[in-house]
Image (cartoon, rainbow, N blue to C red; front, side, top):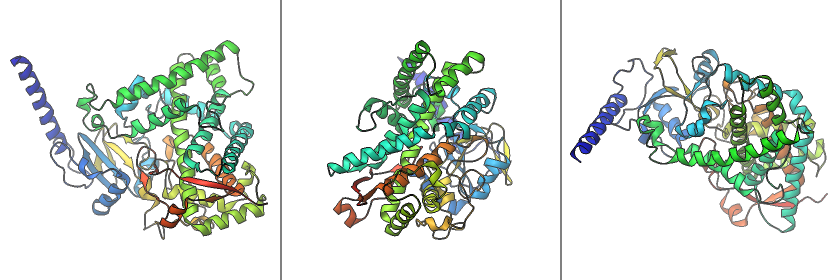
Amino acid sequence: MELILIVVLLLLSHILIRATFAVFGIGEPKNLPPGPTRLPIIGNLHLLGNKPNRSLVKLAETHGPIMSLKLGHITTIVISSSTAAKEVLQKQDLAFSARHIPDAVTARNHAQHAVVWLPVGTEWRIIRRILNTNIFSNNSLEAKQHLRSQKVEELIAYCRKTSLSNDYVDIGRAAFRTSLNLLSNTIFSKDLVDPNEDSGKEFKDVIKNIAEDVAKPNVVDFFPVLKKIDPQGIRRKVDRHFGKVLEIFDELIQERLRNGTSNEGDVLDVCLKFIQQNTNDFNQTHMKSLFLDLFAAGTDTTSNTLEWAMAEILSNLHTMIKAKEELNEVIGKGKIVKEEDVLRLPYLSCIVKETLRLHPPVPLLISRKVIKQVNLNGYTIPENSQVLVNAWAIGRDPTVWSDSLKFKPERFLDSELDFRGGDFNLIPFGAGRRMCPGLPLAIRMIPMMLGSLLNNFDWKLDPKIQQEGLDMSEKFGITLSMANPLCVAPVPLNN
């Protein structure tokens, strides 16, 4: 018993000494970016709060657009300006191209095979090539245009059915279901949930649970010495979620192997063919990790953006009127917006841009990691530092944007500024080699869904909410969602 006690005390002393050294930067270079004073053990963790995107803006006002924090054991560099972001994401992209991997996504060795987390190398390049040439290329997207139109039509049909019962539509949930079925048809040529009902609940819930659990603050990410213990059980929970999804994928893959290729020539066909031709570089484990990433990243981001856009429009009546007028003049009231229509709807495109400026889907982007010590604007960034780019702060920078906190789509009408990675004042999808590969699909789906909802219905808030004003507060996670779901009553138009 005494021996066990001595071992425990020695272990705790070792952890305490390491934590003290880490927090006070003993062994770190002296030329770090400025940052707030660190506390023993926790460093600056107490300064983050439950909305780090906002608290980091306040800290940057004091310490500058390149700021260093100590989050537990982890040296963290926060980028809060477009100029600094350009340096990290473009000029020195390779030096900052590795990922800081949350402990949760190491469940089932997912991070070792997933394109989001893999280091830039052979495996990463192969998977990105599959994404860029077979899933998100212009040719591939054009070939699936009918499918996206069908999913938007199903969304409108669901809203119309809801209107008949004088009920409310949960915009985020309906958009999530639409996005999920679009992806499942693109990958597997079948719906995984019923588009007209709240069915397929387990699959929807597990995808939601993955996003929520990975986003939870995890003590292991700040004190890696606790990795084996997993004190909050987050990795164990994510392991169970991954297991459920991978089991569904296994069934669909085996069904395809038994029945042969699909009529649609979907992503599963492409991947299975690639595996047959390149067995050493890409296997079924890579393929399932890719599918998991597509569902996890492609559902919440799209549905959250649509929900924010609708909330902003409902809070700004003149925007609603102007958008409806444009839709009526260009395509006619009560019609579904097609992809070819979007280029003729500049104000609708401006609404999407303004939504992404104020509400970027991933407010701190996906964190980077510095593999080797690097110089950034005269500061020394130590090896293994975590790097966070605050896209939320950059989109609201008052030195760049006039009336930076106001929703004003008109600001983009005479502007060439875009969010495809070339303009660092607007980087909701990131930039550089690790830019979100799903951007080409997102910028097709969001305007179609939003325009079709506006062009087919009037939307009414609950009278109490209408009187008190819509709650625009946010819930921080890997993605940025509304704290309270947007539920609105669709009213069919009188044509």
